[in-house]
Image 1 (cartoon, rainbow, N blue to C red):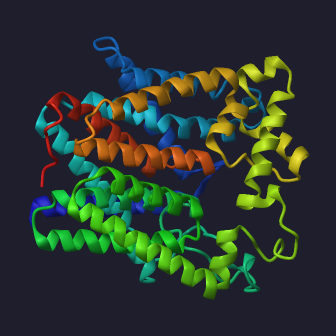
Image 2 (image 1 turned 90 degrees about the vertical axis):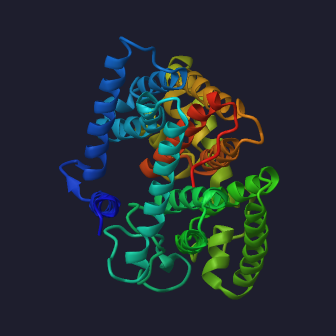
Image 3 (image 1 turned 90 degrees about the horizontal axis):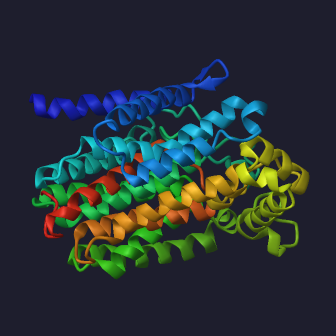
Amino acid sequence: MTRASLKPAFGFVLFFGLFYIEPVSVGPTTIAVLWKAFLMLGLIMVLINRHRLVPINKLTAWGLLFVVSTVLNESLFLNPVETISFTIKNAFIPVLYGFLLYRAGRSDRSVDQKTNFLRLLSLFVVLSVLPFLTGLVSPMSSGYDLSLFQDLSGAAFGFIGIFQNAHGASITLAVATGTIVWSLPYIRTMGKKLFYMALILIGAVALVLTLVRTGAAMFAVMIFFVFVTSRKGIHLSLAVGFAIIGIGAGVYLFETNHDFRMRLLGENIYTVQQSVTLNQIGSGRLQYWTSALENFFSAPFVDQIFGFGPTLAKDYMQQATGLRIYAHNGLIDIVQFYGYFGVFAYGMMLFYIFRIVFALKRTSPYFLLGGMHLFAYLTQMAIQGERFFLADLLFALVLVSVTVARPQNHTHRPSR
């Protein structure tokens, strides 16, 4: 083994181990929160020191203002650990983007470096599922409890891997597998193409095994964007193939597999006997959304300025729905958690994300890359909303690649 090949192998083992032990408790928190808190704090300090020489980009500046808004509420005093945990998660995209852009140059080589890192990270995400799928390693957390769909007494769970929970696994696998799909036309050798296609298949299978609809919806949006935007033959073939196989397999499993049908319909053994109402659509999401908004707009205007924060918002949701949960919609959660101030700061950050992606010509491969991830991100925000580090790191890398590619007259193609 050469030194060049040992480097990624060592990195794989190191990061696999780190993400694997993330659920381990350390006092009132977990390893996951601790190491990400130190990372975000360190990167923010780098950005602040750098600001003396070069202004912070607008996406990061508005993102940091949004991060500040996440601690200006009563929940910080009710449950500081939970509130700060949300603050850390909301810092992922703007801080990672700002730091990676700071480290990036403006040359073709810099674009290739960021794109190669993006591919390598996507490969890591998909390859990390193999030890779990083959039974060599058992996860430290549990995925979806299949006893919710039939009487298994909690004996079986959906796939989770190194991702802490089922939604994290589903969302991260969706964006990583979608990134590998984007990479295919720019791979030169047939052996490498076949390897990437095998990883796409593995990623798609693991995604289905999580039993989470959010990641499946995100992946479908990414493939649809490829179909309507790309002019690469291999992209179109894959998009059509996924559509045919996905629809066919979906119809077959819906008709023959009890668990799959109940999960798709948002049912379980406790609700299947109940009559379906409008509020139960999407596992009750419509009711959660309307309750969260009603709680917010019925509050005093002073509370609406900075929001309730996550802890108090859950208290209000329990009073309204009987469940101590979030809204299952990232945009509505921003409204109730962080109020008008947070909505404004987040809206400006999102505006600059759109501006970065849509500044490119539609024929640029980086417009396809940016558009795939942007619409997958919006899909996830619309039906779930929770932030996951690896998925947000991939999105930040995509935004940096798109930003750095813009000055290259839109002609640069990813390295092979």
